[in-house]
Length: 215
Image (cartoon, rainbow, N blue to C red; front, side, top):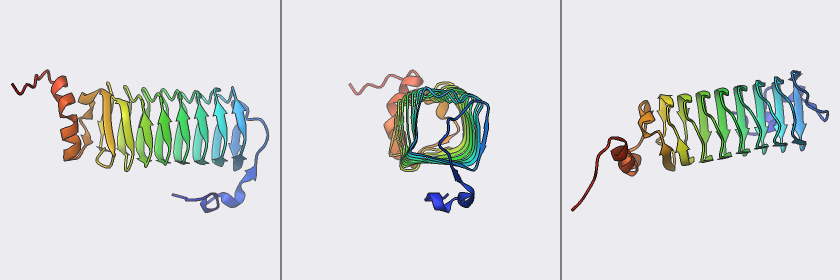
């Protein structure tokens, strides 16, 4: 994965973009830097081989948007609607997502590095070949989502909901913390470490209806 903007294979083709982002438009080879967007209506917008750096999105919507081969660094999504959006071959570096609705989003071959998630809703989303590296996920909802080949190296998972989720080849062993608020039964299809198993033992017991008493 590229470590800096100049490392992007399409870096030399990027052009600075300082206009308004419009809905149902195609943008290719654009670089948005240092911009702030409030209540932006960008439904159905498509970005290809583009970069976002130090951009703030507050409220607004990218519903049904498409993002292919995009690179985001220090980007903030606050209360933004990303429902049913599609993301492919993209990377988020040191980004922040808070109060984001990503219901039904499709993410494939995505890397999140050093990102913070707070109250993000991934319900009914599909994540395939997604890596959360050194991230913080707080009160994140993966209810009814499908996760395949997803890993969390060096990440903190606090208050995660997995009710109704379908997991396959999900590797949780690298997670620093693993706190589930719902959906312990959905861990079928995930790999965890022995220390994580011991930490989750009370939750497994509750889910199985087992009463544990020492006296």
